[in-house]
Image (cartoon, rainbow, N blue to C red):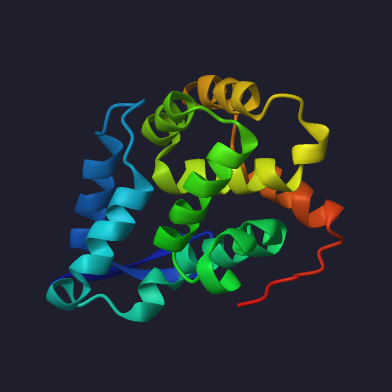
Amino acid sequence: MQVGNVTTPFGRRPMTLALVKRQFTTAEIKSGKTADKWKVFRDASQARALLGIQDRGLAVLDALLTLVLQACPEIMMYRPGGAVSSWRDLMAAAVVVRSMLGVGPSAYQDACEVMGPENAAATIACILERAGHINSAGGYLRDLTAKAPQGEFSLGPMLMALMRANGGSGRLAS
């Protein structure tokens, strides 16, 4: 194995030929091609022992769940015991909240298909937080779903705005 030092944004680092080859392969991917990060996360979680992935490697995506729950603590009331400890719990709570907010099944299904089920559930949690300021939760979700493929909607800014509105209180009760 040949190794050389290269300068990266993080300083000089050793780089193997395999890493250089991977970079060239990545550069050949056509623009517009996407991957569903949550499907990758679920698959990696299920196969972590086989792939040799440590828990630490999956912690970043789990940290996003914590951020969603800090920004949107109201969603936790819709799970038995008020505990949302996984993305699956959040998605189950979102289904309950969806019907409570008057969001039709087809609007939620479309959001799940376009954004992915985890992002759709987090979006429902955000809508719940601001329900008093939204006239039509179903219409709002449909609008966000239509904007998502063009990159006009991203969950991150919505979560950050809720964190600021909540005073960054981190009212997480888990």
